[in-house]
Amino acid sequence: MQNFLEKEEVLLSSKLDYAGKLKLSGLFDLFMDLAAEHAEYLGVGYKAMLEHRAFWLAVRTRVRIYETPGLQDRVTVKTWPGVPGMVKCDRFYRLTMGDTLLAEGRTEWAAQNIDDGRVLKNDAYGYPTDLVPLPERVCDGHFTRFRERPDPENLLTRYTVGSRDIDTGRHMNNVAYVRMLMNTFSVAQLEAMDIAEAEISYSAACREGEELAIYRRKDEEGWHMLVQKPDGTTAAQMVLRLR
Image (tube, rainbow, N blue to C red; front, side, top):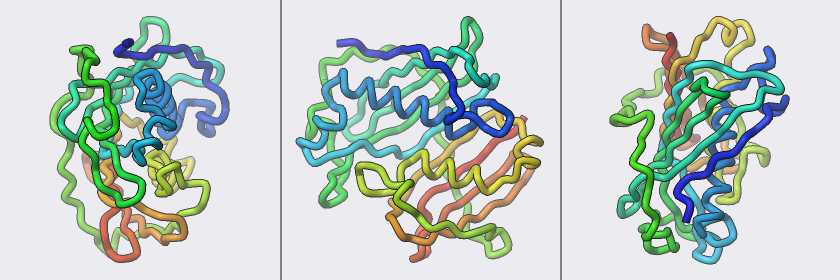
């Protein structure tokens, strides 16, 4: 059983920004799509998970960006899972172009029951216990323990979750949060940014039709963003660390 998956991609406009460069959500898309493909090879892809009434759930993700490729660039994307815990599992990513390291990523995943929302143990849906993981880890270290609180002065805008945001788990897709949050910046603001690292943590599922409040503030580290559900629950938090 292959413990990693690597493939070449040609960057096309769907993943690029106003400058013809890979946008942050495009990077998340590349990593997410390859992870889904690798899961098929491991026997825990979409259809196999449905048999257990389960789907993959991203808990948090960190990416580090070193260089940004652009239109028609041929890049290589690689993904591999870490050592699984009882419930959660790390998955790692690397993006390269030739010998140049462009970006790395790490996501903490879990599996959730579609019907009642329970988080499942790995042995409940057929995760391959005989898989020998690669020892390599990237974006290592503790994930950020977000302590941001909604501040009325930092309320930026509101966003209604639409059908375009919903995935097979019938909640807002993890990359849809990134698209939503990055879309709060103007082109001029994005041009002034040099993102070194982005980290996002998901804490409550958002559903179609919910109106989310988006809070944003800037400090010496970078941009801090918080997504709040209509009942006041924090749904997600993201930080963009700048060079």
